[in-house]
Length: 435
Image (cartoon, rainbow, N blue to C red; front, side, top):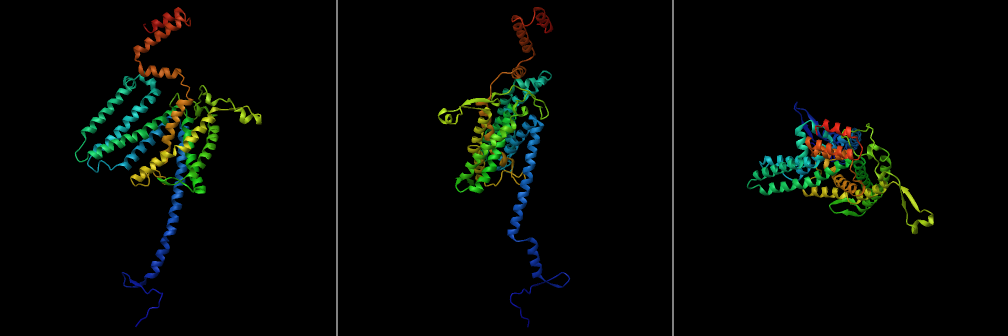
């Protein structure tokens, strides 16, 4: 009779060759090689941190390369982000129409997307190719009838949607249509305003983007350092201390970023040639916000310090206002995205960026900030001046050849009546155009 010593495993397994081996040793070695759950979790966190850091550097580098390549590629970046965001939001908020045997559902989603992009951005981008309008009749027709073509395209999509309705799927189809238009409003329309910011000058694109990024970073750092009070139930990791601390550091960052960006005309000049890049020399009339101005200070507060006025560029004051919005209001775009993900029980909008999730997870606050930047610029900064370029673009986009010649004749008459050109020159110009 064989006895077993307590505490020692006597388990043996038979191999294919008929020999016996101690399985306890193999089990122990297997456990050692695979590691404990705590070790695996630690390794997973380290791996995710490394991947996230690498892709953060890739995104930052790619962003600055895009800025250097010029306005055209910045516009392409925005268009790419809005298309990716639209795709992710539609994928998260509804079951695929293909699974319900409704192939037109996804097709119509993309059709309405590109129709909306054409309506919102087509006219502003076509003006940069105005020289081609005189050479290609189709281009001129599309440019001059932009709104009518956009309306016809939308009506066509509406008719196709009505014809695609199927009994038993009506609730799903109408819900999908509503979601599509909501995403078009919240994403595509606001992205259109961000494109306008690029065309107004790269500083109006880069400054708000930078402020949102800084606010996001310091909200996290201040939250894990001082955070005690929960800010909003839908995002339990957000704290009031992180919210307020990020406001302070974002305000400081707005001064630093403004100081770094304003000396360069490449940043402050509005775009006239869409193919401009960092190495293209730019000259433009300086917007008054970039010129130092004197501001009188309240005597009751500063008279005792013998300070009656201060000279500063107005852009610094505007930057502080932008920092306030980036800190107090833009984060609610992220809270909205968090609520949307919780509604549909997903962690991220996608997996297009390793370690970060989807494009939407990274730009959810940028859309609201960009739309505010455009409104702020048009209200408080834009001089609303009519320039030769804007008049010329309007003429070419709306006049045909006969109307342009009539305009030239009218301008020649004005110059002749004012004495700017002689009668002989006026006669020769009239004969040149057979007027």
